[in-house]
Amino acid sequence: MSAQPIRALFALDDDVETTSFEHSLVGGPSLQIVGIVSGLDAGWRSIEETSPDLLVLVARSVTDKALYMIEAATKQRPDCPVVVLYEGNANGFMQRVFDAGADDLITLPESPEGIRFSLEKAVARRRGAVVGTGQAPMICLLGPKGGTGKTVSSCNLAVSFALAGKRPVLVDLDLQFGDVGIALGVSPERTIYDLVRAGGTLDAEKVEGFLTPHPSGLRLLLAPTRPDQAGLIEVDFVRNLLKVLRSMSDVVLVDTPPSFSPEVIAAIDAASHLCLVGALDALSLKDSRLGLETLELMGHSGSKMKFVLNRADGSGGISRRDVEQILGRTPDVYVPEDKDITRGIAEGKPIVTLNERSAAAHAYRDLAKTYLHEFEEAHAVGASDAKPKRGLAALAFGRGA
Ligand SMILES: Nc1ncnc2c1ncn2[C@@H]1O[C@H](COP(=O)(O)OP(=O)(O)OP(=O)(O)O)[C@@H](O)[C@H]1O
Ligand SMILES: [Mg+2]
Image (tube, rainbow, N blue to C red):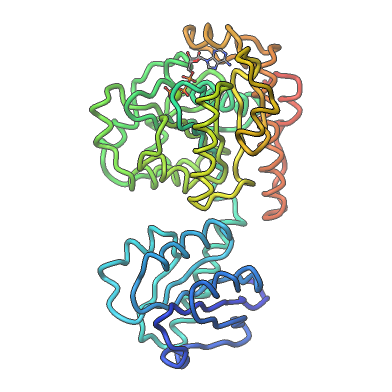
């Protein structure tokens, strides 16, 4: 625990009186109360103003507004845990509160010492998760429209990380029609479906046995081989799985189907980075814009997001300026049309190994390099032992090993 006191902000739901829970509050050397505000809207403003270490939401009933606030607060301030103090029986909605992202739920009455202990524990846990090396970065590749290049981008980015000496895992979350295995020329001897079927506790040792190795060093968790098998894979399982994978790799990448299915939403929520892939045609750009807006509405800030413009040299009469106007942002990476990409899919080879000098291969390596810089910076803030292996130099020349 830090020697600095925890700065806690208390936000009271509209129907809660300060007087009704005041006796439960214990400030002191380890817990400093930076504000007690009435109403969730005021609470929201105070988060910005006071920048607390901990948000405590006091509620009598759990409303959609309260759940939304928990969700939005945990997304915008991932370093700030949210604890709910609840006056009453929490049985009916406990799961919803945790699903929204709350770190703990304390039912009142509870002794002031008990409350303080729980609040301190929530902060300690969260600091451990953010500062420690327990959870690797996770990039979720998305695109609301089919065929824009999500799988091509996932595979090339993942192999670029592997060639840079990292230990990436690529998960094919296109559960019905996933084709990462085909794109990378590996056969699906064990898939995510087999992992579910195996039952029992999900831990790193077990998951490792269901990963398929790729010659680059990348490990793959492949999609089921038949669409009907997808039904067995539940969202909670996917959530747990992603956590385990992040504990056993340097970076997790997730390829997704062209929809916001429940498991895709779970992956988006869990991801530290989002990468939207769109193609250079009017319809795809319109859908990309819609996708970007949807993600923003879901509380994902622009800083977490990158945009890959695929087939960026198309001759459809759409200029880069048009793209920026339609999207409302500049793409982070431009991947040109390249027939070797199509050939590579047929041969099971990503462009970064098939033709490493091509502009498309450069684009994917540059993207990987940008991510590695971001990971290193983030890690340097949280932990002093974060040093790159040989990632950036290897990517600069297009060869890893
Ligand atoms: N830059 C490119 N140049 C040439 N062909 C490309 C390029 N990007 C993608 N393709 C081709 O387009 C097809 C679709 O790509 P991909 O499978 O990556 O799309 P997707 O977004 O994953 O599709 P889905 O939504 O169906 O999962 C593939 O056959 C691929 O070879
Ligand atoms: Mg795909």
